[in-house]
View 1 (cartoon, each protein chain N blue to C red):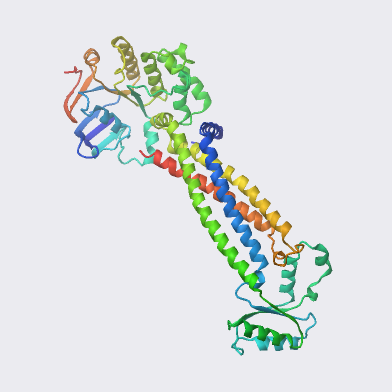
View 2: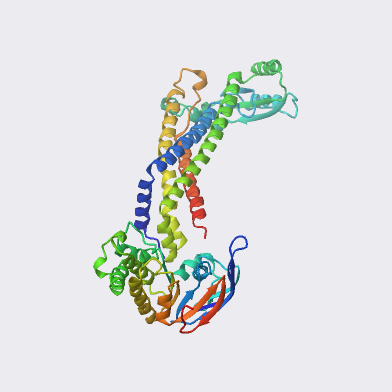
Length: 300
Length: 225
């Protein structure tokens, strides 16, 4: 037996109208919690971009000149080899292709710069994770390499970069934990609003069961109601996160006068992925909340 | 049509509502369940449409052991069993027509079936002129007729009636009994729990008497006592 769509639509609309205030409460809670979840992820992504070069305890980067010879690169590689130099824990070599890819990412909102640079212009580099903790010694090691033939410059990780990474990690964890509690609250609110809706119609449900309506026939309009509540809550949250994404790209990025914000950006793909995830989570919270409500109610 | 094999039902704790009840009801029979309040009549009715499950024993409906029935099949069992209650169980926000149509709607009957069946059954129960009235605009007897129409519109094999005349005056009750008798004559098995001595004594049908959950009498063409 197919459940008629117009029946479900009619019943759902009727029920949402009847429980207007409780429905609004559920939707607002879903919206706030999802907005927090989404923002946490977007901010995390932005900070990760700005500190990407320094992840994994990279303390300094040795940039080679674009025209450095194979022999010169080989010499530096040899000097940094963890097998031969016990001051080095790990080293990663970025060739021209990899460097060009990163360059295009960082300067993606500067079309003039992108169109005038080619892959062959890119400097190759070594990202070095030292085995020693002493800042003085690390500095010394970097300065020595600066003198080597073919080396263009050596860039050190600033403490501020590390600090920003740590703070953002902490903040986004706190936000996520709060958001999870709020999401659980949203689920309970939806569960309650569906239960109220079912209680209001318990007589009808009793008759439906009596004349042989299937449980699914009784359930579906209520589950649909929960789904709508989750979905409608996710929409304003999505708008908020999209807005946050554009704000980050507007005030950060290469145009920013604040050095640390220069690498701060989120790609539109990342924002859309977060929004998609939020909508899915919103729907899930709604469906699960209402599913729990209807199973409890239809227990006989 | 209905067969009980030493059926017992004990509610939470020790209250024993039905004890070792066995009976065999053939297709097309009309059976009165009599006995004082709390003797197990309603429990027996509720066991038959699987609103309750027996603590022990087996119940067959239309040749099938309904204890074996998986829960998703119960609605399909209930489509073959019409139910009528003392308190009518009508939906007060719907008209007479809508109340009866509702029963067909929720089991997914197509519109054209509903549009022909509902007026026909309302004609049968004598409410053809009240189709658009609300339940509160009807008398008790009329409300019970609506509820019988709803129970019978799907042409069930069995009609269960739990004190259908319990809220009605004697004259009105006679009308309701005539209607149930007519339904029974179409071949529908009717099981009716009642307190009403006058009705049982005039109808002279099979009587099953319950007392403290036990069947103490099963008599063809019986009287109340």
